[in-house]
Length: 542
Image (cartoon, rainbow, N blue to C red; front, side):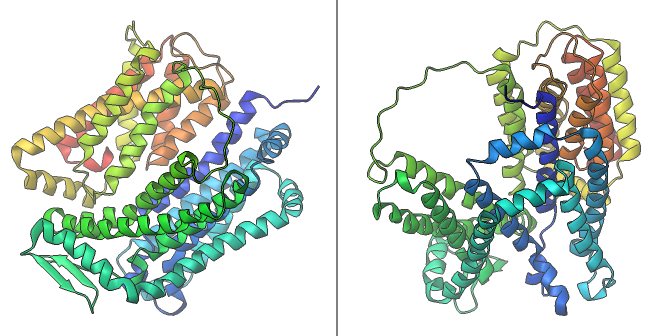
């Protein structure tokens, strides 16, 4: 009989694997390294640190291509890894990883956000940052498996690793090479962007083709080669090439090659729209939102949109694919409880990504997060069956305790607090009151529901080896508490306070008969924090 890994071990492995994903997402959302290059703040070899974000994209692409190449062997590899994985042996590496990432956060903040020039930074900070990156990655890898395991499988798959690395570097080189074509096509790009902007406000249009300047009114941007959209053409071309190669037996060639120009034209046209939208946001709304949030997020959003479009067309266009035997449609299955507990959080995170693209310092679009998350909760409500529920004193006590811990442990951000106060003053009493109403509903209702369903409703159960259940006692498990709490802390900017809150909410759930107690504790914490933020101006705590 073939030995199979336990469910608890599998879930712990997934949790450890997700740690690096959360860390990369946080760093990519929080810091923009290329600003150093655009602002010409780099001096000598320090200038290379402005391309840290580009190298991160190459690394992500390398991992994605490697996973595609190894897709038929991923399950056996994961099976062998889970069979020999022991949490007690891997825990020291995970602790080291957390410390290394904390050091990396500090060094990244010093390099990419502190106002002084790079030339004024102490020289030891640069090798410290590089060492923190290396230790963070290695300790994460060794938390998953022993060094011998990695060495054995890297030797066995060296050819696939080399191909994935070659593809990732080729994409980066292609993206850099395509920037040389910016000159010949710049006139057309500017013409289309100007046409879009002229339809919005012809009188305020500013256009200087030779200097690559485009704007409305006082807000004018220089569209540099790095922002021209050719990097997107290189990325989507590489994505299409890898996809067609891996599934080459399902396509008709040379017809399938039409996906290349289709993808390139689509992402280029979306880049034209992106430029026009960025200028419009900067003129009518906020230069900070345009240059900060939208500029850093819109490129990835357009790439994701075009990639999905290419996949949909490739799978549904009969003239591109080889004829396959018709398949009987699978019967429609009702949503299971596990999906119902996770879907609201997925929607919440997706809405956070989208609204952050149109925000800088202050999230004017926060009400949109509340609405879409509430719709997801409403859709899943019939499968959750949380009623009836009777509150318990332990939930109230835990909610107050976490509120106090959060105020003590989380430092205030004076700039963020000031941004909120300035935004309230600019909106006026009516709109500020409406925004605050949505903020309270999101803070005290939709966010606690979505997060508790996912972390204490799903992850706490699965990590403890139990089926997902929202009512009844759960078996006590230290590993389940640790996994769910660390994941909860990783989702929040304040790791220590977030993890401590996760532990308390997990204990509340384990001591009660209903998930409602954890939801109530979380909701009470957030409601009290909102009141504290409102009265003290401490909006950075939310």
